[in-house]
Length: 202
Image (cartoon, helix red, strand yellow):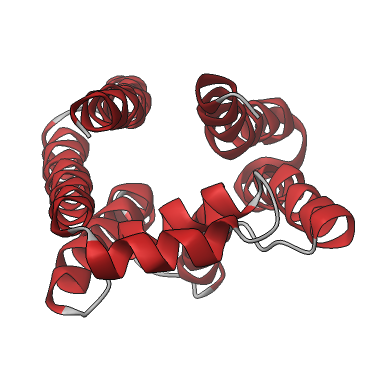
């Protein structure tokens, strides 16, 4: 698959489709039903990927984990304030995972990149493992991408928490949603640009 098409497909499946399902379900089924609906496109994609290509999509699994955390917070009947900030908190937790993974031998973006490349053809994942061992520039680039995603998500978390705390509910919801989509779009756009730049240099 063409790299740009692959990244576009990843954005549609992991951001656009869950967000659309959430919006469509919210007026009819409430918050709990909307969260469940947002997970359906991801679950379907993970199952199709496993059946058709015997591949497990790590990015979709990460988004599903975020939805699962939101559901856990919701069904645990937390305070009203915690309910309001649950989505920013989830994105902040994911951002923290990115940053903490920098201390591991292989950071989180390594597994996301490996998962994406494995879909291209059989053996591509093993090639990536080999390149990780022999190319210091690749290691540096993966760690940089992990750091950028971690800082970006944690910063988005802080901004959305401030919005939720300091504004009325309707205005805070609109601004928080804009910040969320703008952050994801910005991070994915930067990742595509940085990847093309890295390949060109190599």
